[in-house]
Image 1 (cartoon, rainbow, N blue to C red):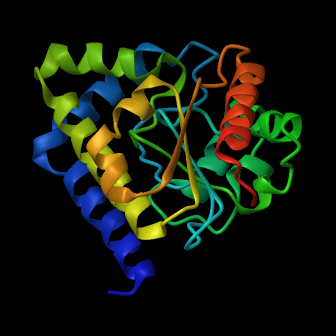
Image 2 (image 1 turned 180 degrees about the vertical axis):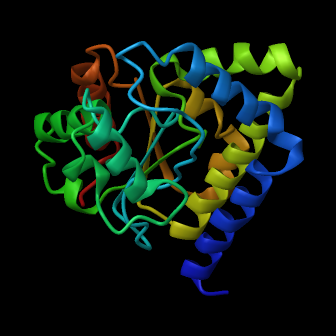
Length: 230
């Protein structure tokens, strides 16, 4: 099968799974979180979408980054956050969200690449997360707590699907380096997964909460240790 069709099929299949009765509790939890926080200015809009790629998924990219899960697609403007989300929610993007959307994670990635003097990576990086449901400011922990009130174990099943399909996408795209940001992303690739994929995996701390300099240092050390030239 054509690689682009394979990727589109993953989008289509996941959409059907996420919208199915099996995960109605997750959708209900997202609705509850949205309603509970509708007067909180930190919650820029209602939740309920999924995002896979943040940039065009090119084949054999030099660099792929995998984080935890989608948050807001603008730092503080609700209208821009919603409009930016439409560029990537449930669809293969034709834009690079790290470059054109003014969101916190994009700024962190730009700062990391600048610090390690790999500014050119920004134009060709392929990025996604190990969990695809947008959770907003409360992160996956808030969603898990709300889901457990409705149906125990449901969020774990959805996480397993996202992580499995993320590994599948890595295999399809065959990047030269896979940068796993944070423990959750790192734990989604077992030692056996890494051996079978036969790719270069770099484990680095997530750049959130002011840790982007440490992220840059760990990536830079990996590049030097492995003598990687891109």
